[in-house]
Length: 286
Image 1: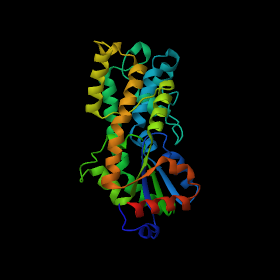
Image 2: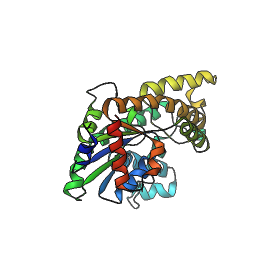
Image 3: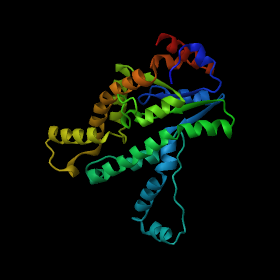
Image 4: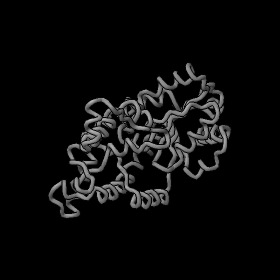
């Protein structure tokens, strides 16, 4: 959704904004701030985990529980109940399910199983993004929130084609909301890599990109078999590759479907009025 002037955005009686960008640029912080006012916060990652991946996540818990004789008997007799406790601030069960490929002795998944879970996440993310119009309506009809903020998560750019004007996900989001890309800096990218080295975590990759980087990593490290790959080693190396892969995709989304702001602007936002002012200036400068 684009606007002819900042005033037309200010006059929009029921605003809807989808924020995009890399991890750590301030998407969730901004969404949480607006949630304190008349904005309904929709977290795509939370929707993925609780609506479309929940059974996969819980079934994985049960598989591991079945390895413990004490729990196995209780599970088979329906004597215990296992579920995940996912919140906006804790998506660890989803990350744990996605896992990392490589040596099973180091907690890695077989590459084929890893790709199967990646495909599940891709389907779930697309469906969660396409749910945005429904939740815009529900936020207003059920909860009487005037405005809507969508925290899209870090991998939106991996499940869309920003160069296709008819991309189903982007056209859906752009039809019902203003797309706002929070652009990071080279320093922020380096900080993300440094942080990831200390705390490697599962990520989502485009299928073709994953296949290419998996083969490249094995070749660089003279590894012949998938189960010889160190899961954390590939995760850290792959994450740095992923950052450089995602930046131009997000820039293309902003250029073709929305607007962009710099991440240094986000800490200055202390209220809804500050947020509206930032978008208004961005529209006038576009």
